[in-house]
Image (cartoon, rainbow over all chains, first blue to last red; front, side, top):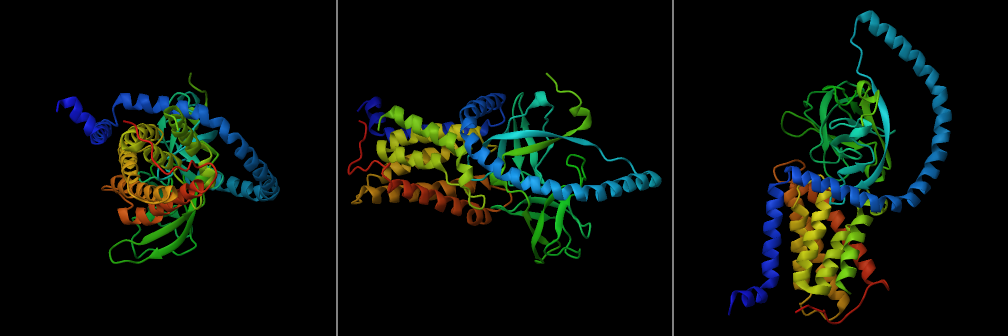
Length: 267
Length: 163
């Protein structure tokens, strides 16, 4: 039997072996610049086809959201006056104490044009890119709170890594007791606050916000609410957090641009 | 079903997966349409075409994800192969064959992908499997079975294999 006949007889196994070898080579060269070019090209092509499909559901959701938002605006307008007074007082007191001003951010609205297709919903493809001043590491938020960070920024699009990705980590704080920790994905739709010493004050129902440590993500952004505190053996608490953001329903997000970036888009 | 139709089906499944399928999410869990299409191709055209379809479908999915390039192409190739092989087994009804091939394909994809995805990282394999992967597998299989009992599903008693 010649080689061709042998290969033909075992073609199922031959093609499987080739596919596995090729996959291993690709996994080994995931960081190669050519792989980035392939990812960008494929993202743009699939986004081009998929974007029109989302118009229908998006309009329906926007219609319902619009009604809720109108009601909320009315409530918030009344609340705003109180906050404004408090903010002015805060600025005055910070100046008196000689505190440094926090970095300022502007909100760049961005539409979700595709979502992570794999087992875990861990990233979003956004319709804003480098030409809109989007850069890797910038925070991505929604009205409910922190959603993730920019993981990759192409010229016209960018990829946001959601808090439900295993590589995501952010510095957070328990709003009530000012206890600091690190928020990470805990599987499913839950988050886990880690690095919290077991003697500190954390309770079920506590609100978790970003701490602003590190300077990438501004402080005070809502993250979620503590649903369970486990005092296991060891030095640290196990704190489960239910996020405010519903990651599977994101349609529009905001990228936080530092003021120096937001002044003028780069072409 | 012609080969061109299968290619279009695979691309359509990917496009739907990144656009409309997230609206079917139940507690952040979504069914995996491209996986079902790869299993379907494997059962209809055998392991050879199943592997090729799985490899290229996975490769496109990898490009759209933040994970390793090549991880889904590897998993989907194996799923295409397995579903093609399983369809040879002597199960009386076409629907029974589909049910068996899809449950094996979906479970294999879930466990293999989750194992590689969580290597050396948090959350651990067990947590990820229970909270994310198995619910996704169940949901995907359910969607596959609903489709199989719908009029859209092409019922055949005998698999058409090339060569």
